[in-house]
Image (cartoon, rainbow, N blue to C red; front, side, top):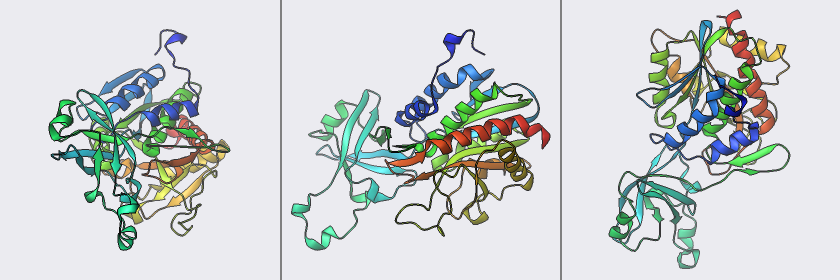
Length: 360
């Protein structure tokens, strides 16, 4: 625990999310995100360790049961595949992208010699034939322009195959309580978990709580698998974001979640191929929310999965659930969420930790 109040980093939930959204940490290269989270979480826990996979495990000591809270800290990005003779970078995608959201974005290439700005260029419409303008450009046909004049010129600043690439996008405030930025998937979950740990200090939490900030979720739930095996908790919750069906281009039948209606408690995701939440976990979360007047939505999804899908199949099985923040435009540079939903999710996680011993 901190030695004095000066060790505590005072930060509101919006500022916490802003800081984490602006940090860069593509899957497999989470170092910057991990370092920042470690600074933020240190005042609220008893022990911190980084395991061999790179997961950050922050522990609040207590008794039984042992609760694991997971939030993945990686973001989707790109990786340099090769540099052509004219100095343009060809790349592969890390994580799930819709190719059209990449075109004409400003990017940051991370090298051992520093960080360099680049842009994903394209042929100007003036030079396109009419039929070409109607075709979507695939990522395989895109390139990054860093201003290099040749392959050798790019190599001088450290740009070689394997360099990770992230979006050059910063957090901004929209109207009402909405904010936008990159990497809300899942820096929103990380912010929620950090703030929940702080609030646990104000509650009577009897359980042992392991907050696992996991790596490589976007490329296969990898950090969740290894950290859950090592911690072997009695019960677990993953925090993440989830899609909404409340904007043009998507319908409620695709997602019944709405911004401003509270966090989503997952009943089932990926049509049951991911997780079907254990009834005891659902009772715990629903009752905790009701007793503390926390709004929530129940989600039955057909799309993606979360760290909970890996955690609940670890060892002989771990009862697990998911608390997600409804977010528009996930996996783009301009995700949008409601700070009121994030606040409600934070309270749900904190109070769930305080009541877990009554259910498990």
